[in-house]
Image (cartoon, rainbow, N blue to C red; front, side):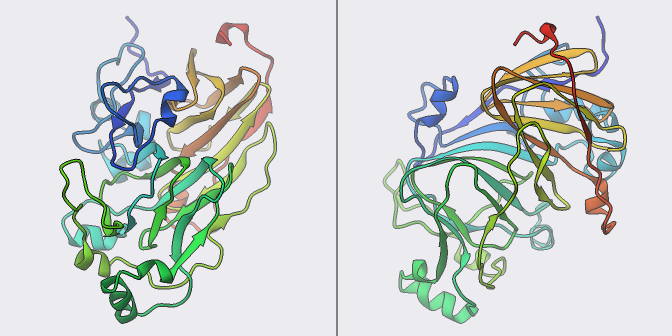
Length: 353
């Protein structure tokens, strides 16, 4: 049996939430006996919630066990030196059938001060948004901590918040420290640092399954909040088919959008990182390291850093979020960005699409 690395898929992790819905079922997932699936964790290195490999000879091992053995061959040498054997990202689908709590996440410095490994910066790619759907994205105007406390204690915190009306295909980058909330009737893909730390600020006096008010983290949140206003939280980008379109670049992750209607090749020779392909629409396949791995919307494939080239295929049309961690970003090498070269390839009937 070959023990050479290959592109990996993972078993889904389903999370029942008080605000969750059932839209994720339309992606072909069965999360019974849960009454809903508010969050599908597509790929996770979070302790006690590590994703398990679904394919190949590593099937049954969780992602952090794979990293313990293959180290930089999977993460990239510099990324492994930084993150070790804990996968540094968390990818989710979120189905908000009701409003999520108004919340904030700490940055790395505050999280580490409080005994956690890292904070949480994240991004949202909107898959569906109902008519009139809203998200909270920061403050509408400059707010002092004293004003914030007064409005919060009076139950009027919503009056201070900047509200956006998302549409399908919109992208919102949420840095650590920005107060935020996902409104009802929204389905989105989330990419974030590996962290499950959330400071809940306001929850509309909502009760949990046991009839109790969910706990708030008023004092913990106060030191985490960035009180500056948000003028326009939406990231604007130029949509194109069969091209790599940049969505987000930061020290924690780089994310591109690929809308695929014909086969495409990618050259990652210059990139010292794993590459994730998170399918958010349609059916696709990833070919690399002499393996072809199919996926449908809601699934992702991890291509190890040891791979230099990748070929992508779609059945009619597929949309993929391409995600990696560029060491040049977290090392602060200003002006240096590593991007893969794209090329079109002949359709490989062996892909099974």
